[in-house]
Image (cartoon, rainbow, N blue to C red):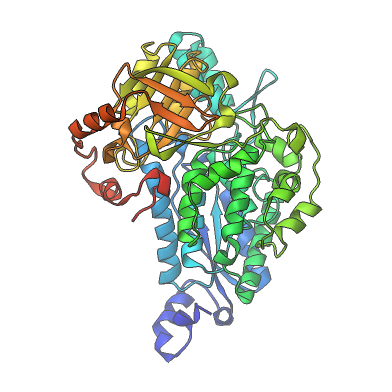
Length: 550
């Protein structure tokens, strides 16, 4: 065992002394040492209910014959970090999380890992670490939040708070109504109710075979989740004994399956960044174009918030991810999982209990998958749009550019009523390096919806979007403005053409004019010159490579 490095031999007397100081017994020295990387925190609603899951995992490890050790991993709530300087840290924290799991695991020579996670960047960071370390690992996601309730209406975070900001600004909502919505929209713990980034990543983790069956959609704080946590603890000991490694599970077939399910669900556009980053750690070649290739042949069979009116609890009671796998079986690659069952076996054993929540392929919500990748002179390296959340009217759009060099500038203009029908809002210098951190633009996109402009205004950015974003919002534009990408050359009044069916994003000027404009652009000074974000900006890759650190 890896842990023998710190617990076997005469030269390890001091190591054993320190281990005994933690409370272990001499008999424990013969057991696998299993780390529980817990992202419990009181700061993140999706993570506040992890203490019982930690205990359940510990008990499962004991039952399986291992010795558990809990260690802490930080987490950021994207919703709380949104719309201000805090969002610079969100994507950047993904790399910190992966590095911290690696550091603790290797420093203490752990034999296996249970990765307890839930929210946006924590789950991909944990998966990156598992792929990088390549020691037996299993992921437990803490579960989705239930919907809020108000006067018989179901409430969720994005539609009923972020999109309410503009309504509050215009006086459409009274102070009393605002306070009521604030109290009711998020009734308790869990990852936010819709198919936003956190829940999409939980679904893809289970699809890739890194979580036990049913984990992704099992609701927070229920006994089912504790049973899954316990069984995950017991299962990891077996995975260690059998030397089942993450890269044997997270192979090329697993990523194909994850993208397929992502497209069928209509998941968050952030999954593109995260799957690219995880694949990089798993040594799997995953080109950006593959997302679009799979999207073109995968119908969108689910319509969850923000795209539709169903929520994670509806997906759970419709059969969860196993039921989705059943629908898609013919398009999937058979592959092993931490369940010791294959993907095909899980699909065969599943039951679909609601054919409206998980529609048949021949009655899909959309003929294509949820995400499209656009190219053109504005995005030679590619850009990403959640096409499932774009109305038919706006999938082909042409408008005049109105340009902003930060999210704050754009947000001020939107709330002041300076954005008009027929415009394309351009937000630049918000990419991985230029941001830095590639901030999510949920506040501006929600404000556009709240102002009643969702079907009349488009938004493009070298930043990214929340999984809760809806409307013609195109992000991840590569190269980014800070690196001299064409988006830096857009001027107010320029015509921008968006053609999602043909996968085109074009600035309507000649090649000569574009080249001349780019030649005049001077790289701006970094926005942040101290601390972690300064180092991150110097090292981060472009969005089309997953915004990984080089």
